Length: 404
Image 1 (cartoon, rainbow, N blue to C red):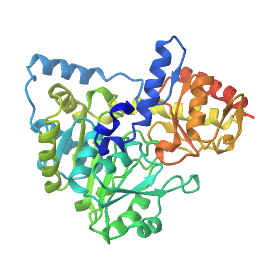
Image 2 (cartoon, rainbow, N blue to C red; image 1 turned 120 degrees about the vertical axis):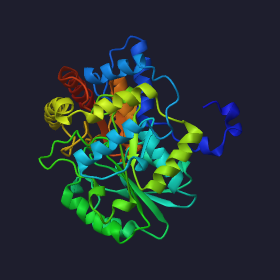
Image 3 (tube, rainbow, N blue to C red; image 1 turned 30 degrees about the vertical axis):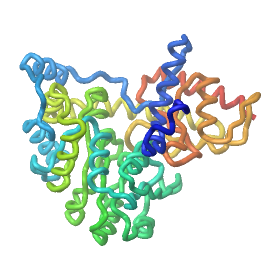
Image 4 (tube, rainbow, N blue to C red; image 1 turned 45 degrees about the horizontal axis):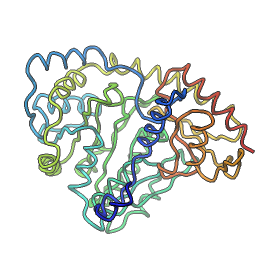
């Protein structure tokens, strides 16, 4: 930031931390522009292309002249498709009036936080958490209340921990399952136990980020906490097409929520972004109406194989401890054994130091765990080819061996 003009900027933007994943991605691009052979495992973006059937729908939408402003909350046909998806995949009943389509799931989360949270309201955030949760709460003038977890609990909160964290000032909780960054997945029984706690505290809204829903390696599959009737009214389900449908750049997210919450989000969106990209919306109808087994399952099988490759490779690196991820496409190894070690003039004091060292020495871009609420870890995305992952793991192992 240009220090000369810092005092002219709002306090809001001065307090805002930049996205760590996007910062690392920018550093990787800078090095690549200089001709350095860098492997980036920093972004949550698959290396798959958007399926042809979805691209064909977008091309047809252009030919059909979907080039005008779209309705603020989404085209009626897309909202109906979202309702269909919720019923088919989650056994959740929503009406189109309960759906708001936004420019990505991040936009959806921002909208929800803005319409529910006031200054002084507490928002519970289990850690490790996705990098933007805390900052989005701060932008709403809320107070983030971080709930630490550890590898011992598979990075999941317990009902007892939740009960202790709730106060009269608690307005909401936000979490993801499958989790970014850990890959942790809450089982149906675990969510049922958490739902029982929330049901005793109906003033607490549950913002359930389910963007990685289909990238799930468990036999049980995905459960949405909104499936439990006792907490359905207080739950806002956030989802989108970026991850499972390989549509990161299309920017389509959506919520299912109580009608009054959806209406508030629509009102806010009408003053900020207006309706989401018209062509992308029409393509999204085709994506959501298609059979997930045909479009998503082949990708999930590939991710499962990559997960095994990465877990094996990390297990062969001395000092690293890795919990088994059961969803998403990330590994979150504990690197605390390397804290305090050095190579030349470089000393590793924290996860940021280690990521910068690996970028410089191994030319591998990763994201520091400090940005996810756990400085003992780093995040590695295995949304890359097996050959790329093998080379990245080789470089990481070689670079870490130099630290003494």
